[in-house]
Image 1 (tube, rainbow, N blue to C red):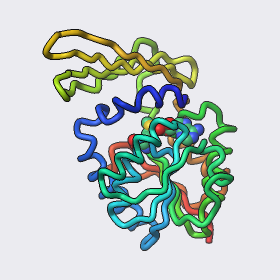
Image 2: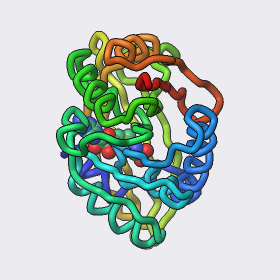
Image 3: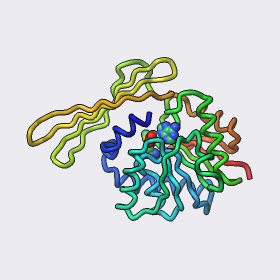
Image 4: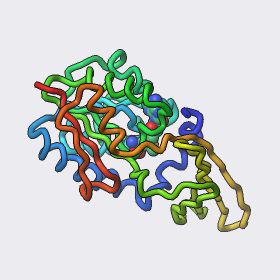
Length: 249
Ligand SMILES: C[S@@+](CC[C@H](N)C(=O)[O-])C[C@H]1O[C@@H](n2cnc3c(N)ncnc32)[C@H](O)[C@@H]1O
């Protein structure tokens, strides 16, 4: 898993049409969501921060942010991106299944965005991670995650998911994923076709990972089992469904 993201790190921003614009937009959308659910809460932990897409935007909006990820390379890049953006974020490497052991408690908000939790392949692992995040929160604190809506995704093999093309530094990148389902799990290959526009030399990067295509209802049930209350799904506020839950006061 961390190998997939370590290798993805130099290309990660290309997943977005304009990564810096996504950082700003997601920071704005998440601030609005947090202020609506848990007004005034500002001490935030991102347990799957990647290169800092949410953590940097939220730090720039006045949140006090600690952020971690399993991938060392992503954390190295997140530190560089935060410095360039003038954002203060306390980054570290940590498996979200050990978030509380690593970060301790006292956070107002814990978040995990862009379909990170479905990288955990069993209900037992998801429950371990959710319980650790619950323990990171102060009473009354909130958990917020975003994930794909797997109920709306076709099942099968050789499913192609296009991500478009980007041009950068004299190179064109064409991005797409191929999914192969096996029961409730699927193997994903993320292809980055890199073309040097001056020489026409082409190089393909193929990165592989596996996901658990869990439904949002099942995820909500696991959140309740981990102790969260007022668990619900919010649509239309972010590019993926958001799930929220609160640690009882
Ligand atoms: C799709 S990326 C999203 C990253 C970031 N939130 C964003 O939106 O750019 C999923 C992230 O989950 C991280 N991840 C997967 N399993 C993890 C685990 N067990 N603990 C911590 N991070 C994990 C990956 O390393 C990756 O950075």
